[in-house]
Image (cartoon, rainbow, N blue to C red; front, side, top):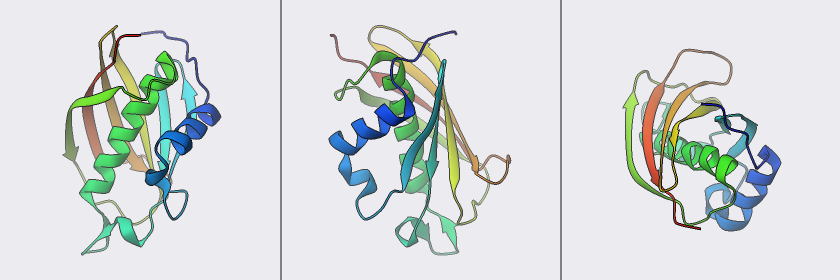
Length: 143
């Protein structure tokens, strides 16, 4: 699928800061780091609130990264539509992530008029071994 993005990483970060300031309340935890045709990369810089007992990044934190990355790649290609919503998200936790920055790479599998399907892989910023993978479906409101 070859799609041209209509929003840059900086524009997406500004949109998320304005529309969803709660995701970075207390610090910059989630950042869009790049947008390319059909793809967006986000970075999670975890703090103590993202860690579960056992010294690992919590499942809900990785779920949030997958959901946010899916949302970002869709918006990057359709524009700032705040009311696009998750209708389904399945996640597979593959390995115990160390407490370190995580990169989520979201790829559009389908971008239709009403639905989008996204595959997101997550790995340490300093490595390539996957820690989680998710598939999300989003409903896109009519323009």
